[in-house]
Image 1 (cartoon, rainbow, N blue to C red):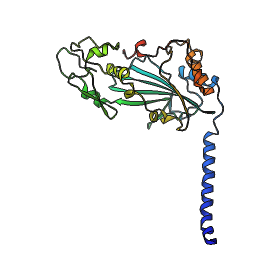
Image 2: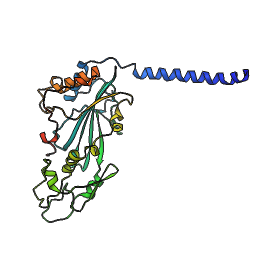
Image 3: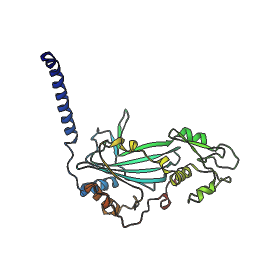
Image 4: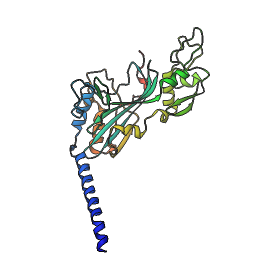
Length: 297
């Protein structure tokens, strides 16, 4: 028995030391977080609105470039489809993730942009030999360039081929899944999606039309997964809610900061209190792509 105790004692000591170091590391990972308030949240949103990095961004090197983007439903090179807001918080950490799906006009890419705001963001960094690019935005590819080139119309005199889907296409790959393609333009126009008329006598479906149609008919197919959303925030931070409909003001109206808007004031209240009942907007939701001009360049 004494011999067994002697053998077990070093093992028990090692286990105890390992537990202590784990606790220390856990405490160190959270020790920089402090209780936050609505003012801090709104200030950070105002900074993004102005394109100014906040104090939580990595310092980087002198040659590095930093971007702090605010949500934009009117981007000229992005045919907006869907938009959502994800809220996360505990007693010391908070995060807002703004999700926007659509088609990159002239970019041959259908995807999702995620804008991150908070005090616990692992900011995306694109590393290059000359400089690094630090931003609060992460992109997810839904339909890549190769797939768009495969499905694009390639034949026909006096018929536009650019960013139009060929009539013989039956399925389209989204991520790694083949989705049935609806080529009936009437089904698109019933949803308010205007199919291109110029040089398009056969009423072929445009690339941007496709993403908007999927948003209206099968939104989960073009929505970010929880794993994708949480790639740049702590895995253990609790999720409070998802806001699918909200009132949005143009990013190009520089006279109205987020801190002056009801939407973001309510979001700040929800995050600080961790009480979703504070989300009681009085302004009508207008974030639908139908209310905004985008992808027109």
